[in-house]
Image (cartoon, rainbow, N blue to C red):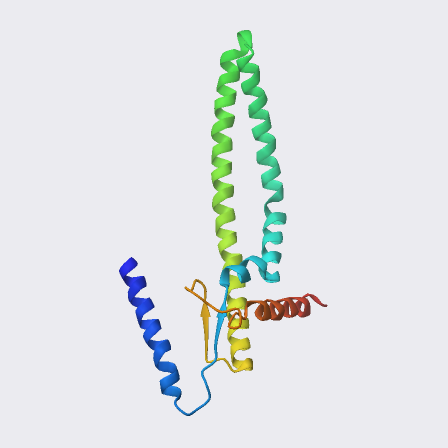
Length: 174
């Protein structure tokens, strides 16, 4: 894996080194840098997706927390010495623990699936915004993070975030 990354890095470095030569007497090549992590953390489309997921899974999460609280109470009663009911309480607590584990695993899997769907949708919007920005502003190349170094002058992340915010606001209007 490291060899592939190093090879890809060398190819990119060679490509970048040849761009100014290939441009010759033509205009200088415009290169920009985008911090994709910052875009994915701050783009309103991603933030809205997170909010949708929180609303979508809130009821299941609350039900799971209520069952966990009930299981805790059962375990406390068992620890306090439930007397003649101890065996029945243990069986009930064990069954409840298994049920909680199944529900927690199901919730985690469903949340992962939906998170991936939301991220895919947001990723497409973000990628399109980067491409549109590059074309409109005359960039020849936009390099995504991570990179070894990018000067603040080459960083266009804030400008693309502004574009995404405008797109989100325009899409939110009736």
